[in-house]
Amino acid sequence: MPEATLILHRKRIFDDGSISEIKLWQVTTPVGGSSHVFKYSLYYGKPGQRWIGYDNEAGKGDHRHLGAHEAPYRFVSPEQLVTDFLADIRAEQLRREKKDEAK
Image 1: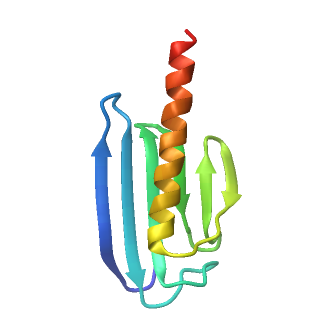
Image 2: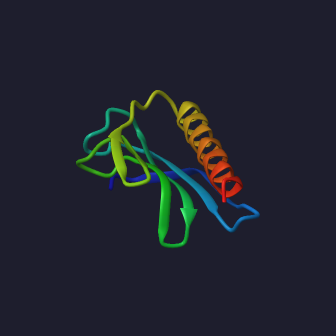
């Protein structure tokens, strides 16, 4: 990875034991497959279970994981990345709440 400076690291543990973690670095040159100067790794799930993930792994470029599905992600800005991630977390939480209520 190119030289990197960590500019954001936030971790939250929710009441149900799920975890969200955001790591964002500024790099000197774009990560392979990306056209911007940010490297990121965003995670939501439980230990051993990734429900949502966003990253720009070298060679793969910007993409996100929703459950077992992986799709390209259009990176606009760090702020939009966090906004999109938090919206996906809320949607997943609502989905899980409805599933629990149906039991």
